[in-house]
Length: 453
Image (tube, rainbow, N blue to C red; front, side, top):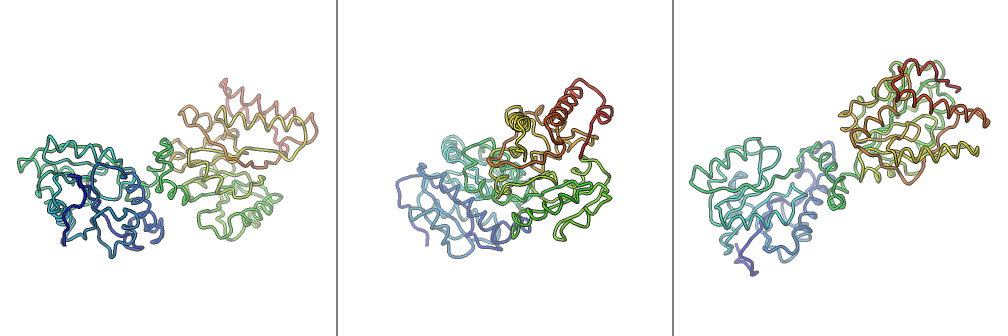
């Protein structure tokens, strides 16, 4: 039974949705998420919409399907009206939702779906205002559909589209309304969230918008990012065992992490020492080539490039995720297991260079959004300084790195022992970078590099 409106507003905002039930909602996101996670994601959408719509100059009607609306009532509260969807297809269900709202005595009705967690109250209020000068308001989505329809009297020709879920729905709907002699106004476009790509695009937008970053949806997506740890190796039998131990300690029982070793043709016991639960790949020697090879065969949303001789801080996965809330690219602060004054100086300079100048090096554990890594061409496959060259490219694009609160302990073995050796190595690396910036051929620079490990 349809009730008459109980509040004073002449405007009704209809949210067209379903009770979030595992296995019945957001199914296009499986198996990227489990059925339970898909339902939780849908709950996040609804929480964000409910929070945003508080205090609006309209009443809320929840047109639902999927069983008893327990979560919906908990989220939208007692002041909202709840009506069950009726009809054989999506168009008929939306038409009946409008009929129900008009039968309650509302003079203007705006309906949206619930797959738009970025929806703003201002958009809904603007739609009501636009109905003062037009018959129908419609809001397009980026994929060719629409998320919003508004009317001040029935125009049910809007729901005569034969097939929903295709890229021509918005265009066909507008044409049907205009052919019926009604005036249509188009409101702001939004992105509905249906696929994994939609989720990751929303995460990118949230990085630029602090308010969105605090949303339930953005936090959900970020907390469930999958991290691919990519470790290049070449004759690393002295470090692999220690790396395996810490990875086992820090990632055991987690399903949001994959470990990929990429060996460059080791002649020692490196390959045999890699744990059976981790992926082992082989390709030609060269750090840039090995890192790219691992990235191409990874499945993570974030790629974490790790040197085999590093010591990770506890909860390093959570450190990465925390940093990635605000950045598409980042690194750990670095420290060295040496009390040498010049190694302390090196630590300070390295962290300043990464955070202030935007140039992290590989020994700081670079991590980056998967899409961004491939969009920017991956690491250059150079005989050395692939990390420096790639960081400079990102800086030219205006992409600044974030830095974790905890530091990674990086081996000082390439610097040797003794003050003289440390100074010599630091000067060599500084000079190689300087000569590269001046245009010196990278192959010549590789001949000048002394690897003392």
